[in-house]
Length: 342
Image (cartoon, rainbow, N blue to C red; front, top):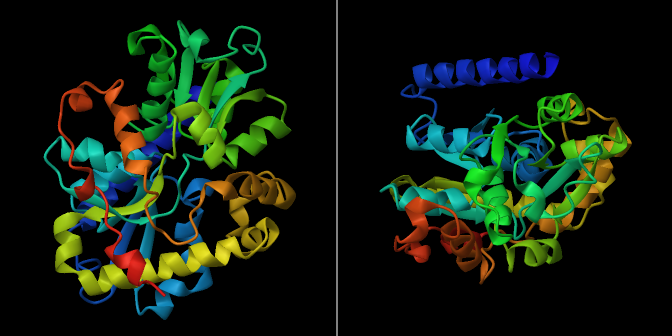
């Protein structure tokens, strides 16, 4: 029962933070004109979204004359909700949300593409390792995702459908990440699930499970999904981007500078710049988590050429909203700002 208590506590905290945001969504802190920008991140302490906090820690936002407030939600789908509601000006989450939103009539675009692989790992608990040896075995199982409608949910569904398992034949369970994911795995509330570092490193360190599918590298992404899968990104409402080009350029400058910095520094050096409480499993384990995930990141923030088409194909395989819809991929991202970044 303790795992559910922890999960519900996180859910309550998320709801409270969203309520707080709604209350202050229309205040003066965030129209971008004065350099104040609010960005919601789908889990600030996740390594896949590391560039957000690292940019803050390196002082690159400040160098550009920006006052950026980073906020956190446990799942990317909640970051998307905050952006669409106008409570924040940007979201750091998976690029796939831009396609999903377009068919729902919302025009959102990736402005800086942090990655060309998902950075996600399908973990199987040691107890279930004998019966789950591939996605074909998802049938009848309870599988953890960060949130329903999140990118972990999307990717789990794709892996199932691609292996002949219908989305109705397994149960996705929203367990967040970090300690709530680990608790659900320990208690047997899930037999496996999709998560990222540092959760992956902690699960392996505690010998609670093993890796079934590793999508932290471009090679792993190609093997599981058939091509590059651009995931973590800064995405924003297109109308806001078009009316705040100076501010967006400054954001792109800061993030591209960070991505370049990451490509020339060791995992240990990167870990040392991050807030101490991000290393919940200890400094060495946190540095290892960063090392495992580093291959997913781009060095220049530019969308990989074949990436959008891979994402569209993956989403259309299981998402009824997208299946027969026409998606204008050119409107789901822009390279205008990253190409100008120094």
